[in-house]
Picture 1: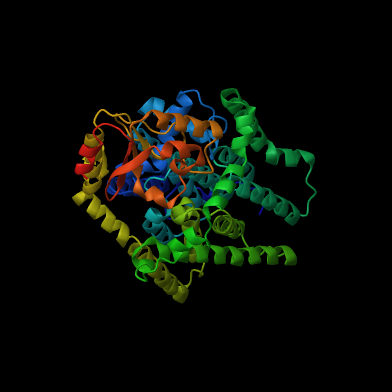
Picture 2: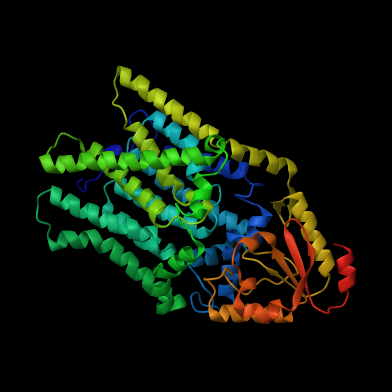
Length: 526
């Protein structure tokens, strides 16, 4: 548990070093990204037009207008996410492909961090194979927002530093993580402080003030630079507000989120038994259980060592046990503490898969019969991982075969027909699309970041109300009927009464202001 260098772990004996492992992990991620391009996980038009990916582009547009997050628009993430998008869109262009380019860059950072962990933990070849097979489950081809990939990069880099014996640097990464998203960064940061304290006690040496300052110094320097820099950009109040998870907690509570809530149960109780086999559900649950169980086993081993003052374990084994506990605790904290909507399982699935790989890799010693059993266990888990991606493979096949191109992205044919039909119906009429996402074209979008009730500020709602007051047509995404979006806000009651539905399809709903010209003509085209 001591803070020592792990130069001897830079290369697994007979295996890949950090550079080779990084290239391997990055290569698998790039293949996964390219294969899933036309699916809803990557370059899907509807995902950008109506869901979270589009909020990233919209957030940059709001900042470009001079709006301040938490003041002029509700915002639940950290300022570094906005800054990353601000700089990245200036380089790549503000749009879906600029977003995807920034996503790939973040995932290359994750690849480096994950590779360093695998090498530092001396994961055997079978474990590396298992990890690569599970990568499409561990790391999404594209996350919902840039916030999630940046947070993943910070966490995997911190895990790499911790695995290499540099906990103080890992703590510095967690300060960055809090500025990206104020959730797991706090959990991991406090955990690192606790691990450092436990390691100090285990050495039975009195730590000097100088030693403690050396531990926190990277975090203090990083935090100071970020707070000053971000305060000069957006103001001290905004920096403090975005470092606190209060807005996100309120939103989660209002939406009934949680692993054991209605949203969470919709994932791990899918209704159809076959989904446990050919979708990520079963593999994820297996990884989560093994990760938590491995943390318990490793934690017990560390406590026994501390109680008996045993020095039988090597530093490599102790470091592996420390990492197993860390990964298991972090992922379990996510499941029990801040699991969100149904698809939130993929936010930190790299932790679950890492825990699974380390657990399986540590399950049996290297001996004749044990090696045979270990290979059988690894083979069985590899099969589970492969089967869990059958549903994804089907989505990839359907995407490449059936989807159409629109605005440089992929879209379902029926949705494309509906959208084009709606645009013909509104003609030159002033139209607002009440969406959480971003759409290019001759339509207005709500002057709000994420117009779902509980997030927008009062000034934000007033801006949207003034927009609706001036338009002739309103387009809604029918799936929003399951949620309380801004269109249903009491602030828009008077404006909402001025519109009535004149056309409704499978995906979209078109409303027109009462008494407008051409109303009967539009009705006849329904």
